[in-house]
Length: 152
Image (tube, rainbow, N blue to C red; front, side, top):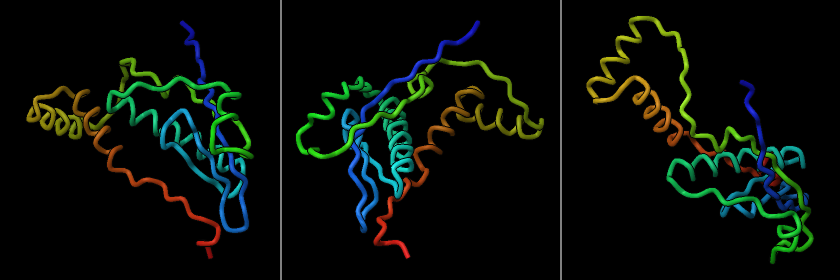
Protein backbone atom coordinates (compact mmCIF):
# COMPACT_ATOMS: atom_id res chain seq x y z
CA UNK A 1 0.00 0.00 0.00
CA UNK A 2 1.42 3.39 -0.97
CA UNK A 3 2.06 5.80 1.87
CA UNK A 4 0.66 9.28 1.47
CA UNK A 5 3.18 11.94 2.43
CA UNK A 6 2.22 15.37 3.63
CA UNK A 7 4.12 18.42 4.71
CA UNK A 8 3.43 21.12 7.23
CA UNK A 9 4.36 24.60 6.01
CA UNK A 10 5.55 26.78 8.86
CA UNK A 11 6.02 30.48 8.15
CA UNK A 12 9.43 31.94 8.90
CA UNK A 13 10.51 35.54 9.31
CA UNK A 14 13.87 36.46 7.82
CA UNK A 15 16.10 39.36 8.78
CA UNK A 16 18.64 40.53 6.20
CA UNK A 17 22.32 39.94 6.79
CA UNK A 18 24.63 42.84 7.49
CA UNK A 19 28.40 43.20 7.25
CA UNK A 20 28.73 41.83 10.79
CA UNK A 21 25.75 39.50 11.16
CA UNK A 22 24.31 36.59 9.21
CA UNK A 23 20.72 36.26 7.96
CA UNK A 24 18.46 35.66 10.97
CA UNK A 25 15.42 33.39 10.75
CA UNK A 26 12.63 32.96 13.31
CA UNK A 27 9.89 30.31 13.28
CA UNK A 28 7.25 32.27 15.20
CA UNK A 29 4.84 29.37 15.72
CA UNK A 30 7.53 27.40 17.59
CA UNK A 31 8.52 29.54 20.61
CA UNK A 32 12.27 30.03 20.83
CA UNK A 33 12.93 28.42 17.45
CA UNK A 34 15.39 30.45 15.41
CA UNK A 35 18.52 30.07 13.34
CA UNK A 36 20.88 31.92 11.03
CA UNK A 37 23.08 31.47 7.99
CA UNK A 38 25.63 33.35 5.92
CA UNK A 39 23.45 33.00 2.83
CA UNK A 40 19.67 33.13 2.56
CA UNK A 41 19.59 29.49 1.45
CA UNK A 42 21.74 28.43 4.42
CA UNK A 43 19.57 30.42 6.81
CA UNK A 44 16.30 28.89 5.60
CA UNK A 45 17.78 25.36 5.61
CA UNK A 46 19.09 25.93 9.16
CA UNK A 47 15.62 27.12 10.18
CA UNK A 48 14.12 23.91 8.78
CA UNK A 49 16.60 21.87 10.84
CA UNK A 50 15.87 23.97 13.93
CA UNK A 51 12.11 23.48 13.49
CA UNK A 52 12.55 19.72 13.11
CA UNK A 53 14.67 19.61 16.28
CA UNK A 54 12.11 21.76 18.14
CA UNK A 55 9.28 19.43 17.15
CA UNK A 56 11.30 16.33 18.02
CA UNK A 57 12.06 17.71 21.50
CA UNK A 58 8.42 18.72 22.02
CA UNK A 59 7.20 15.24 21.07
CA UNK A 60 9.79 13.63 23.37
CA UNK A 61 8.51 15.70 26.29
CA UNK A 62 4.82 15.19 25.45
CA UNK A 63 4.16 18.80 24.45
CA UNK A 64 1.61 19.61 21.76
CA UNK A 65 2.88 20.78 18.38
CA UNK A 66 1.43 24.17 17.44
CA UNK A 67 -0.23 24.29 14.04
CA UNK A 68 1.30 26.63 11.48
CA UNK A 69 -0.18 30.08 11.27
CA UNK A 70 -0.96 31.83 8.03
CA UNK A 71 1.69 33.79 6.17
CA UNK A 72 -0.42 36.91 6.66
CA UNK A 73 -0.52 36.40 10.43
CA UNK A 74 3.25 35.89 10.53
CA UNK A 75 3.83 38.99 8.40
CA UNK A 76 1.80 41.10 10.79
CA UNK A 77 3.52 40.00 14.00
CA UNK A 78 4.61 42.84 16.21
CA UNK A 79 8.36 43.41 16.35
CA UNK A 80 9.17 42.01 12.90
CA UNK A 81 8.49 45.04 10.71
CA UNK A 82 10.65 44.90 7.60
CA UNK A 83 11.45 41.19 7.92
CA UNK A 84 10.82 39.02 4.87
CA UNK A 85 8.34 36.15 5.11
CA UNK A 86 9.03 32.64 3.86
CA UNK A 87 8.13 29.05 4.69
CA UNK A 88 9.83 25.85 5.71
CA UNK A 89 8.24 22.57 4.69
CA UNK A 90 8.47 19.81 7.28
CA UNK A 91 7.76 16.26 6.15
CA UNK A 92 5.22 14.16 8.00
CA UNK A 93 7.97 11.92 9.34
CA UNK A 94 8.83 14.69 11.84
CA UNK A 95 5.40 14.18 13.43
CA UNK A 96 5.10 10.40 13.11
CA UNK A 97 5.33 8.23 16.23
CA UNK A 98 3.87 5.19 14.47
CA UNK A 99 5.59 1.99 15.55
CA UNK A 100 7.30 0.32 12.63
CA UNK A 101 8.63 -3.21 12.47
CA UNK A 102 12.13 -3.36 11.02
CA UNK A 103 14.65 -6.03 10.18
CA UNK A 104 18.25 -5.37 11.20
CA UNK A 105 21.40 -7.41 10.72
CA UNK A 106 23.95 -7.74 13.52
CA UNK A 107 26.78 -10.17 14.20
CA UNK A 108 25.68 -12.85 16.68
CA UNK A 109 28.22 -11.74 19.28
CA UNK A 110 26.76 -8.21 19.20
CA UNK A 111 23.20 -9.55 19.30
CA UNK A 112 24.12 -11.66 22.34
CA UNK A 113 25.47 -8.54 24.09
CA UNK A 114 22.35 -6.60 23.16
CA UNK A 115 20.12 -9.32 24.59
CA UNK A 116 22.20 -9.53 27.80
CA UNK A 117 22.03 -5.76 28.32
CA UNK A 118 18.30 -5.67 27.54
CA UNK A 119 17.60 -8.59 29.91
CA UNK A 120 19.57 -7.01 32.77
CA UNK A 121 17.67 -3.73 32.21
CA UNK A 122 14.33 -5.54 32.11
CA UNK A 123 13.70 -4.43 28.54
CA UNK A 124 13.17 -5.90 25.11
CA UNK A 125 15.73 -5.44 22.33
CA UNK A 126 13.51 -2.81 20.76
CA UNK A 127 12.98 -1.01 24.05
CA UNK A 128 16.70 -0.91 24.75
CA UNK A 129 17.56 0.37 21.27
CA UNK A 130 14.88 3.07 21.56
CA UNK A 131 16.05 4.12 25.04
CA UNK A 132 19.71 4.29 23.98
CA UNK A 133 18.82 6.25 20.85
CA UNK A 134 16.77 8.77 22.80
CA UNK A 135 19.50 9.16 25.44
CA UNK A 136 22.14 9.60 22.76
CA UNK A 137 20.14 12.23 20.87
CA UNK A 138 19.76 14.30 24.06
CA UNK A 139 23.55 14.31 24.53
CA UNK A 140 24.41 15.59 21.03
CA UNK A 141 26.04 19.03 21.07
CA UNK A 142 23.87 21.84 19.79
CA UNK A 143 25.01 23.63 16.62
CA UNK A 144 26.71 26.92 17.29
CA UNK A 145 25.83 29.99 15.29
CA UNK A 146 28.83 32.14 14.49
CA UNK A 147 28.47 35.76 13.49
CA UNK A 148 30.45 36.88 10.47
CA UNK A 149 32.48 39.31 12.61
CA UNK A 150 33.63 36.38 14.79
CA UNK A 151 35.07 34.47 11.84
CA UNK A 152 38.64 34.87 10.69
